Image (tube, rainbow, N blue to C red; front, side, top):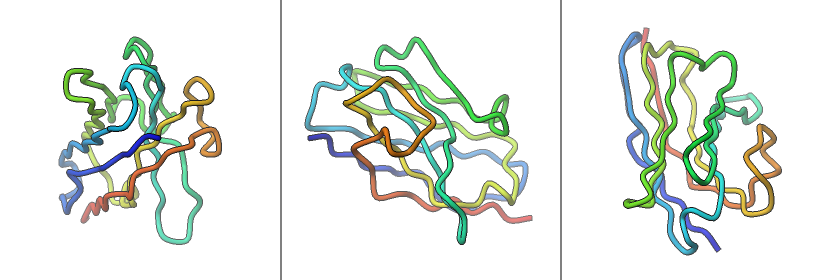
Length: 124
């Protein structure tokens, strides 16, 4: 079992920055890959970024490349998502997820543990 708790969401103006955190517990942190997804109202949950269990590999959705950075701190059992140059279309609930059954993936159903989500709202 893996428990995930996100934090750091909020309201930010367009062009601003925000850092999300996801604290993991319940299983050795370096044994699973992790990802961030987001879901806007009326839309499907979409892949944002992922990071390998070692932290040596990172992957991004095309629209996030260059604006978002995913990282993980093993000493803190925490994954971060730094978001820069935010746009109103980035408004969504952001979820972190862990996969214990496969390597990182862009497909939400490969992830077997999810946090409760944190709201990010970008005003124009």
